[in-house]
Image (tube, rainbow, N blue to C red):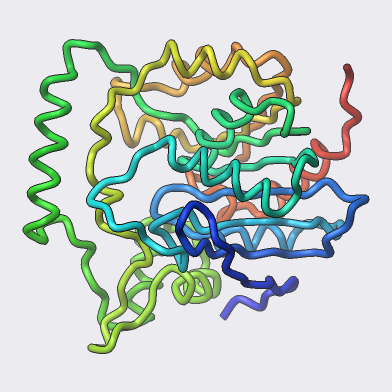
Length: 305
C-alpha cells in the first residue's frame, strides 16, 4: 500500500442543498493563498494525494469531491448540468475563503471547469493551473436535434439500468481496473487509490463512487465561441500542462485534436505551456514529483501587472 506522507482532513459542508465532501491538507492561514484542486470525470479529490505528498512547501490545499462523486451527496437527478459545477465551486470558495483570492488547479473535466470559472470570476483567481482540461469537440447547430434525441434515449437507458457502473468483487479487482486503465499506475498507488475510488456495499460488491447519470450525454451542445469568450476574460497567470502521450488522439481521433485545443486556449492573455514526459492523461498519478515541481515553480513566480 502506498505510504502517504501528508494526511488529509475530511469534512462535509452544506453547498446548494447538498452535503459536499471536502479534503484539506496543510495548515490554513490568513497569510497563505489557498490552493484549490478540483478533480476530473469519474475521479475523486483523494486522487491528488500523490502530488500533494511531493510538494515541498506546506500548502493549504482544499479539494472537493464534485456532486455525485466520491463521498459528496448525489442530487436526486437523472443527468448533470455543467453550470452546476461552476456554482458549486463558487459557493465552496465563499465557504472557505470568503473574498480572498485562491490559486486554482483542475484536472481533465476539473481543468475545464477551473478555466471557465477563472474567466467568469477573474477577480477571485490569483493563478490558474489547467491539467489536460481540454473541454469537448466543437459542435454545429445542426447537431442539436440528434443530440437532444440521444440525451432522451440515454435517460431511458439509465432508468432501465443499462448505464449502471459495473460492480467489482473485491478491492483488488478495483485496483486492477485502475491499472488496466492506466498501466503507468504503480500497484501500491492503485491499491491506495482503489479504497477512495470505490466502496463495498452490503452484498460485498465494490461500487465505484460515481453516479451513473454522469454517463448521460449533455443535452446542450458545446459552444467553442462561448468558451473562448470566457477564456479571454481570464486575468490570472495560467499554466497549461499536458502529458507527452496525446490523450486527445486516443479519445477523439480527428474530431478534436491537441492543436485545436491549443488554438482555443491561446486567447488566454497570460499563458504558459508545459509538457510532462512519460505521462498519460492521469499525469498527477504518473509523474507526481515532476508535476509538483512545476506547480511550485509556477506559484512562486511573481505576477507582473
